[in-house]
Length: 290
Ligand SMILES: *Cc1c(COP(=O)(O)O)cnc(C)c1O
Image (cartoon, rainbow, N blue to C red; front, side, top):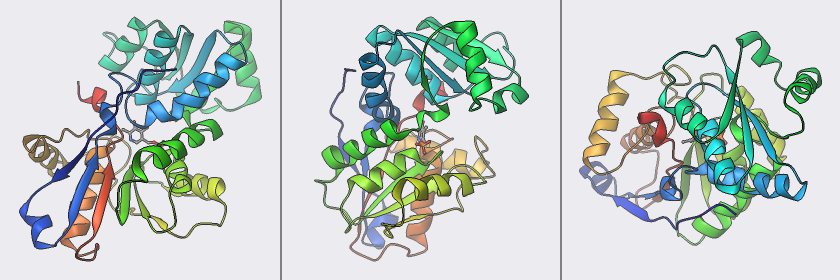
């Protein structure tokens, strides 16, 4: 098992929330592990135990050059004594950025593939060719989303957030795996709001639907806070993140910054009824700031 550190819930105090009579809390799940941080810890948990149960020695996964998932998988593999292979989209650019040099220093073997090849990552043919090249491995999909990841995120919701009385749980959405798990781990009286960071959020929406079936109506996606798409940013977003840093809340520009910006904006627009308690999940990702 990976190390796990219990994480605090902090209150954000400011004039906006005071005037709107809102109680805004942040679950600092980014602090759960030094390297396998935030939602990635929970997405990896059952994948790691399954890999071990099946007797694998090597983990193989996919990601872009700034991927939090690559960073986390490399660190988790090192901690638990697995070998790891990262299939990275694009060319090797030297010097390696912080994410990739950390992964390599953690023992991950980086294998760069062209964008066209990377697109084939889910095909049997491509995976077979990887097996020929690297031998047997336990495969974790891009971003880490699969059924075992969702099981881990549901457990996070049940064990770490369900006991906090709140009306809304907010979190950023990439593939949708984390939010699908969190929705299924919470009871019906909590509304879950996802903030997609991709411009085309149809894929994450379908993924969430697929995981949940039609059984839940108490979640929604707020689709106006992607700032142009994945890893796109704006001066406004950057200023906001700076401002939050001065309030001792470090955020990343890809995921958590967009979510918090969205929460502030929705509060301004009176989206949350007065008296509401909103719990934002800090899903991690601060490694990307380095
Ligand atoms: C990966 C990641 C997400 C997105 O999680 P999904 O399960 O893909 O929706 C959100 N926040 C951070 C910080 C991440 O690293």
